[in-house]
Every structure is written in C-alpha cells, then in structure tokens.
Image 1 (cartoon, one colour):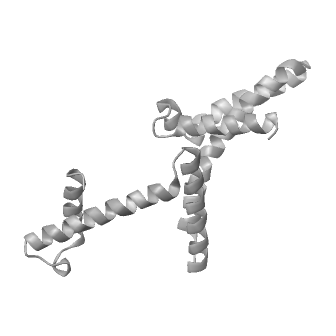
Image 2: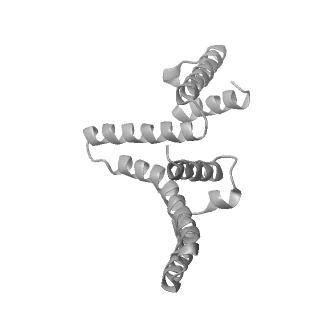
Image 3: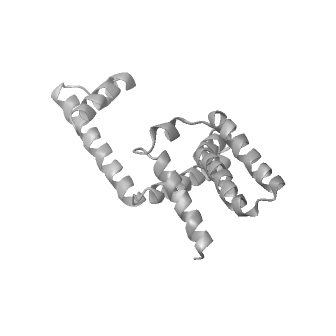
Amino acid sequence: MSQNGEAIEELLAIMDRLLGEDGCPWDREQTHASLVRYLIEETYEVIDTINQGNMDELANELGDLLLQIVFHAALAKFQEEVEELVQAENQKDKFEETGDLFFALVNLARMEGIEPEQALQASNDKFARRFHYIEQTLETRGRKFEEMSLADLDLIWDEAKAKGW
C-alpha cells in the first residue's frame, strides 16, 4: 500500500476510535448539523490558502478539510443503511438493505478490532442463556409461554439480564 493509502487508513482508524464506545465524548456527541460550522471554516481556510498562493500550507489545510469530510462520512454510513432499510417498500428491497446493514456492521466491528463472528456467537449464547432463564422461571411459577404477555416476558428477560444471564 502506498504512503497515501496508509495515511488514509490511519485517518479512518483514528476516526473510528474517536467515534467508538470508548472514544472522545465530544466527537460522539456531534451531528452533521453541529459540525457544519467546522466544515465551512475548513473550506474557507482551503480557499484562502489557494487564493494566497501558499501551496506549502495547502496540504495541511486540505488535510483539515479531509478530516471534516471523513467525520461526516463516518456519521452518515451507518445511519444511511438504517434509513434505507426503513424506507424499503418490498420484501426483496428489505432483504437487500438488511444485507447491506449487516455488511456495514461487520466492517465497523472489524475496524474496532472485533471479530464479528465471535461477537455474534457470544450474542447468540447470551440470548440462549436468557431464554433458558425465562423457561426455568415460568416452570418454577407453573406458567406457560402462551399465558404470558410480551410485557411479562420482557420483565423476566430484564430480570435475567440483571442477574447476568
């Protein structure tokens, strides 16, 4: 990979860390709207540098502008995939958009250093443990699934979760 490619990969990795769960609180609170002023500011700085003919400084200013663009892109990608799924009008499109969303999640997981298959298996195991807890609880109480409302089952689920199941 070229030096430029490595620099872009490093920039993307930094942005992922900043926006990640343990990332920068300020960055994680930002929205497209809250970042507009920085995008405009950096754009004007690039234009000003070009107008001054200061080509030595132009690379720095373009880097600052690129950071803003990457920030917006990182915020937009996952949101875009979710919106496309919600707006899908037929089963075929919903199926395709669900796949795109999974793909985006897998890429996000990998960028965060998480093995997606292992994370999914851990989630499946956790679900099975909690479901088993619900089954045991209902048996102990002499109740059947068919008799329970979804709200009642959710309460037992939350109980399992609180107990670390």
